[in-house]
Image 1 (cartoon, rainbow, N blue to C red):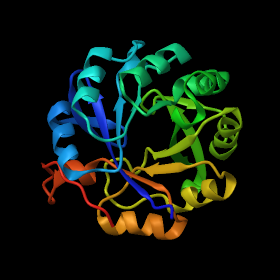
Image 2 (image 1 turned 90 degrees about the horizontal axis):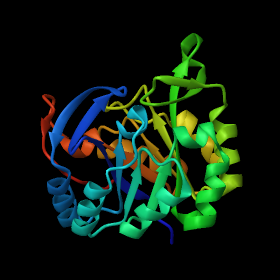
Image 3 (image 1 turned 30 degrees about the vertical axis):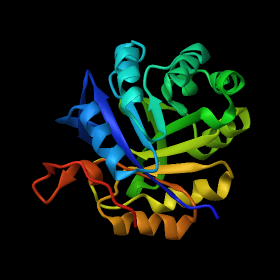
Image 4 (image 1 turned 90 degrees about the vertical axis):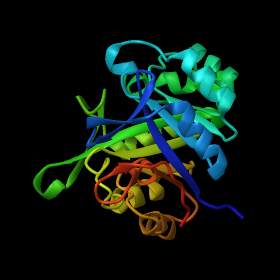
Length: 247
């Protein structure tokens, strides 16, 4: 029987970890190797690492750091940030990562998704779609990249469907508005995406409690539930404390 995956999402900046709110105001939350050691003990379902500076600064992944993380990890890993071609994706998979995520590069050149799937296998290709609500009462959803600085003229659902047709094995729906706010997921958009694709999907942005995780999985069935702040902060003063919980 399929079950939902509960996945911490960690943001890399340089050699450290940060946590953002609405893709801004990054707060240092620790060392990635130490975090991986803790999550090993928690036996998490999967861990996603996103380098938030790589694409924005025009550099590739920090392979030395990724190698150290993979050597320490005892859980499935996904990495995103600065991946521009299938060869780079293959190098990351060779380090021991199960999945490689692309966002801006796929928006600029969707054919990259097919090239990656041909090189590393569909099951290892993830496309992350960063979404912001706009318009009257937030009625429309717009796609952004480069840390929410570049807007793209594509419909998020149509883009997700195109990526799955090209070979994406998973779609990650990432809410810019809810990032770090800990006020619950955007269930409405998640529901629309679930109805549009059969490919595995993960929703991230907004989880503030195990009840939020449960609300997502109860609404959409077996799905990936991603969270950042929920697993790195404790209490109303947001003290840094790495933790993990399932609904």
